[in-house]
Length: 92
Image (cartoon, rainbow, N blue to C red; front, side, top):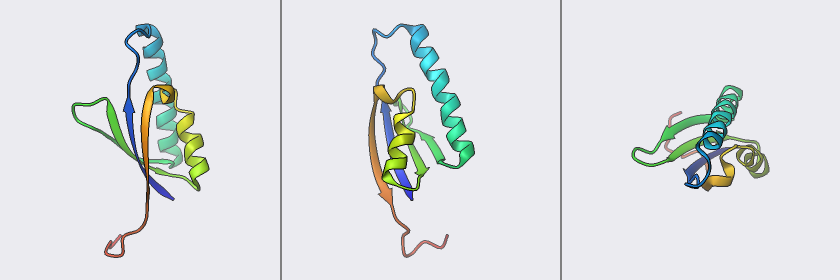
């Protein structure tokens, strides 16, 4: 199943910079792992915002939740999920 996911990140200003950088480094490693495994199909930055649109491939809603909840930045995110279905006019 494919899901369009918007993630808005809001790291608290009082979080120590070193801690924030360590979380971001772990996030990058995990995100790239999910991309290599085929779960995180597309990753697009929203220009001018600390946000992204992504397409995830997961077997179920529960699997998607598991993938997202393991993101190191998850506690600092607002996430919107939209399930996707094949459009009848799509040629691919």
